[in-house]
Image 1 (cartoon, rainbow, N blue to C red):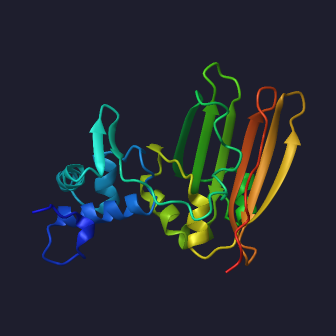
Image 2: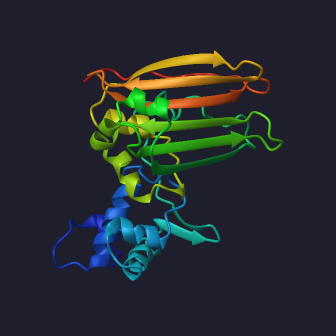
Image 3: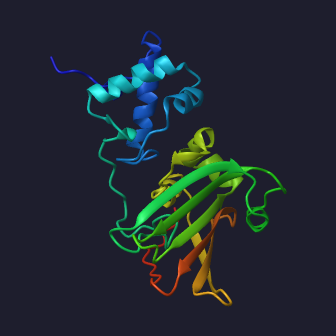
Length: 247
């Protein structure tokens, strides 16, 4: 008889706790909160995230490993479930402009829960020193050329209304990988129409340009602000996107 996965049956009170945790983790894999191939948070962080013991987390991961949904190697455990297709193939990547300069580029992206830069706090309407989700991105070619860095801060509105973003609060320790490539699709799925405004400024005495992107919704509420620095000597900055329709 074929083995069932946690997603095949609805949760019931009689199911073991590890099965319920496996089901919740599988939901995050399916909705793209944890993209395919991304390294999962460690057992300790997952235990804190779900409010259970590390042994329960181990049992839940074993269930998912048995069904081929999670694999473990020297890098740790990572998702293997195929991701859902993006509704619009021309949808915005996150952060816009933060694409690898060449196939050999090394990317790193993490999230922290901290007070954002003062300019970000003001743009998002956050009180001084109030923490929020801050995403940091860095990419550079094998020789260090084409370097790009980006810092994004999210508003309280984005975290409250976009479930997938809100989930990152519990594991925003600066060490967990956080490729939020579907962040804008998550916002659209939450019913938000996205309005983007870019300001591109050459930096005096440097070869880099700064791109400041602000995103707000159909009610003019700020959602996020990103500061992206690009090495203009080695790289071209190309935007290709489709603004989502309202409704």
